[in-house]
Length: 285
Image 1 (cartoon, rainbow, N blue to C red):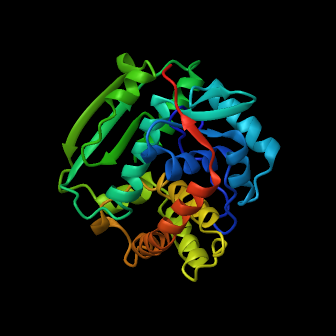
Image 2 (image 1 turned 30 degrees about the horizontal axis):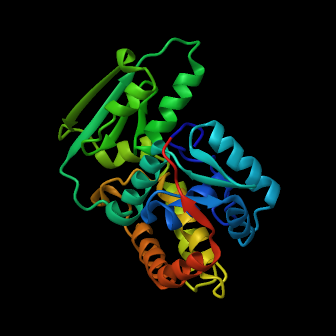
Image 3 (image 1 turned 60 degrees about the horizontal axis):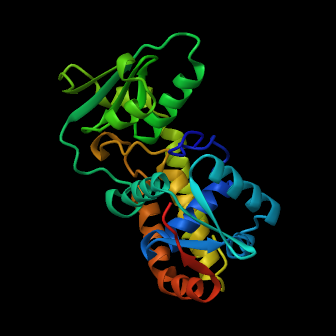
């Protein structure tokens, strides 16, 4: 993720998800701060909450420091206590994640046949820029049609990404439809790792369907891990048109499980957060 938009983490076994502290911190702020106005949260509160999902104090403190250094959080001192709040950049990241989680969904049934094609040619020495661009394209749902030509379903707005990376002069973007001679199903299988995406959805549903993915007595911890795990999965899902996916695609069932548990824990997690979190207003920069 890691660019500023926190792109997908490295793949690992879908049966044993290891969530990084930064992913949990972002999920925490998305769950309990983003929609509450401009607030800062006491570091001790963040440490206490992440301890509920097995993240140690030192890991949390070092993660908060790194996120401040990267412009993802703001630090604000109040007396002897340190509080942390969102930066505009992170507000954008969390809202984008919220769009993916709560509105777009994991199943694309509205595809109009349009594809976005992005071609790029970068100097051989620009390894970091190449990595950053590929990471951001993956997060935006692109797959590699060829090494320098990437493709995504629908009309995907990537101008801001290209501009932020300073690569506008090296990138060409088109919107087009496939000729009838193109085997779209075969192209999808060649450009995206469908087996891995499906395995992550299936493992998520297996883990959570019975309500055993978290700690029922602790709705705040349950919801934190639930959202962080779900966002990790959908970040690797390009939302390909459902009519071109294998039958019995597991994303729909996994999404139903996610939304059921998210709804079950929403109220109690919010009440617990109101009782446990120490917050102050975010001062103007």
